[in-house]
Length: 154
Image 1 (tube, one colour):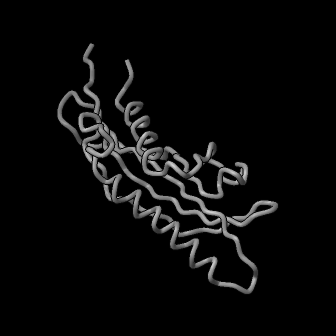
Image 2 (image 1 turned 30 degrees about the vertical axis):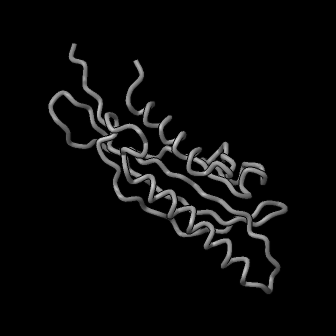
Image 3 (image 1 turned 90 degrees about the horizontal axis):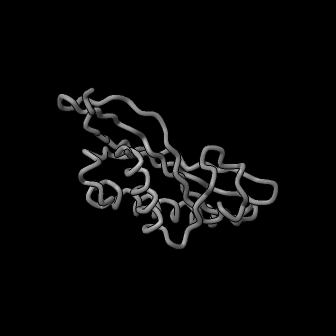
């Protein structure tokens, strides 16, 4: 039997594919710089972070699990121009807005029966990272989702 957390994971992936059809999914969001530059030019990735138990009704197993979406954009610039930073930062902020606006509703994920609530998301600062040949900006958006399964009593 598949638990609701697996169903939720699949729903999050489907939502991201729907929201960002023109972006590339980053294969390894756990170690972002280990990915090819091609994935990070305009990419998104999903990372599953920690969880904590959450109060629920008797015979239910409930946990608040954090899902983190990483959004990346390539930064094309020369050393004396600030405009590329402004443009790229605004693009990431628009990506975050799209994600938060659509993600903070369990109905949007199509998992009303699996997800009890989605808490307001946290974001990281926008960070710059470099590879051998390119510069990128990234931002993480974390969504705590409360998922509850009915415990099967033996």
